[in-house]
Each structure stands twice: as C-alpha cells, then as structure tokens.
Image 1 (cartoon, rainbow, N blue to C red):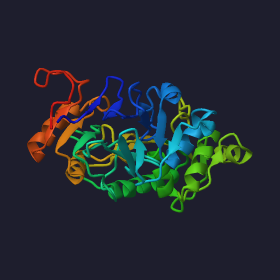
Image 2 (cartoon, helix red, strand yellow; image 1 turned 90 degrees about the vertical axis):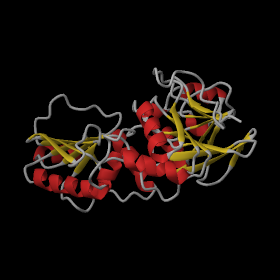
Image 3 (cartoon, one colour; image 1 turned 30 degrees about the horizontal axis):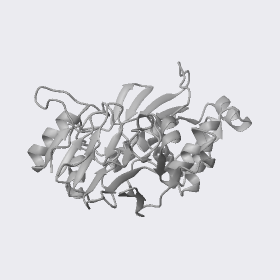
Image 4 (tube, rainbow, N blue to C red; image 1 turned 90 degrees about the horizontal axis):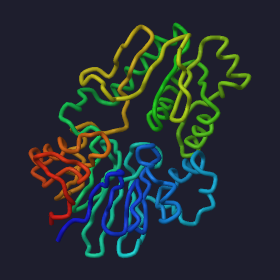
Length: 348
C-alpha cells in the first residue's frame, strides 16, 4: 500500500488524509504548525477558518504575541503537550521537539492502518529524542554534500564570543539574526560581555516570553527608552535586530554581525566582510551530515525530500538513496528529467 505523504506547491506538507503541516489543504481536518518562521506560515489565516490547528504551547504563545489578536480566544487552536498522542479522525498526532527554536516540533502521525508517517520540520542535530516512522517528509535546507561544517556549533559559539569582545573594545555592535538564532546569541552573551543590550519594544516583549520558558538572558533595553537613549549616546552597546525589526540603511557607529550559516565557509565559522562587517555561522539547522544521521535515527524506509524550502530536495533524495540505501525522492512540486512529476504515493 502507498505512503500518503507529499509536499504541495504552496509548501503544505501532507501526512495522510487527515493532517497537513505548515500549510492549508481543505481536505485535511487539522493543521500542525511546527514553528513560526515565516516560510512555514503559508495560508495560516485560511487555516484558522477551516481547520483545527495543533501546536506546542510555546508556538501558541509566540503567535498570540505577534500575529493576531483573536488567537487567544479561538477554540480551534489546540495546544498539545510534547509526546502526548492526539486523535484527528482516523489518525493520531504526536509532537516532539525539533530543537530548531522555541516551540518547534517534529510531527509523527499514526495512520488508521497503524503505519507511522512524519515530518521533520526544521531541526537541529543532535536531538534528545527522534520520532520513529515508516515514511518521512524531510527538511532539505542543508541537503547538499557541500553543506558540511567542519567545526562544531560549540566552536562557532566560541569564535562569536571572541569576536564580540574584540569589537566591543572599539564601541557598539549591531547584531542581525532570525528567531531562535538571535535568542541563542543572547544566551551566549549573557554574563559574558559587559555592555547594555538594546532592542525594539517588539523584540523586548518577545524575549520576555522566552525568559518565561527558562531562557537565561540579560534584560533588554528598548532603544527609545531613557536608558536605551543614554546607552546609544554613550556609544557602547549591543543592538539586536530580529524578525520584523527595521534594519538600518546605514550603520554609522561600531560593527555589524550577521548570524547565519547561509553561504558560510565550511572550514571557518567567521566571515570578515570588512573591518566593520562580519558573519558568524551560528545555526539551529542540522548540516548535511546531521540530516543523514537524523534520517537513520527515524528508522524511515521511504523519504520524501521537501523541495519547497531550501531548493535541495532533488540532491538530498539522491544522497539518501546512494548513501543510506533508503528509497527516496523529492516532493511532487519538483520537476526534473530524471524524476519526472507526479504524486509520491506509489511506494509501500
């Protein structure tokens, strides 16, 4: 019998007839929201009107904080405890942490016939607990053999902290990062640097929520508060810019550091663009080797690589087949001469 899993052109990940992840499919009773990064939020407003939305407590609270004032009052948003099975028609959904950011989850669905299918979501490696499935939809963000980091994330953190100390000795630092990575940077710097932390009022509220989930991070000063204004005038501060914050067209004082593994060198976590501009490869994504290790840990016998995010679906499917001996192919929203195009439901 076929495995009913695929990824639609919109990026919606279908796991059987009842459940879709990070997108909207009208036939599915429930949508699982794996986390709140924007590339996983497609058609969320539509889902609110037609589906039950299953998510972790942290993701629910982050969404309520920023996305929509009616979310706290909607009965179709259902918060699931990690590891607790939840019935959806003939299926059973279980969420496990993916380590990617606060609230991010792996999604395991047990179908009516007892087979288990799952979606990795964006994930970190290693993980404390990996779901066990027969068939897997796999994130392909770092799905190329070229996406191997020859340094650990602990080493990247050390380089980041060393760079921060060098640049703070000369003045201010502006840090740009996505959710998750930014909050990890705050944890690294808290207690290890001596400078005021500045941020928008929006980001200050978000960090307060992270703190309520046990993140040990320094208090942020709103940039337009009296304390924040004093710190800016003194010229010695760290200013954090997260998702949704306006970034300066011109930085007149100090250095800028972008935290991302995208286009990073495989042998060095730090890129120096100039004496005032740097990149550091802090990442909450598994690299290529970590992705293969994750597949092995799930026990999956069939893998669909998600080609709607990252663009490495075709390459990763080939590598999973060649290196692991597991049947794999890219999602049907991908077209090549080798793979053709069509629904991925013909593998048992």
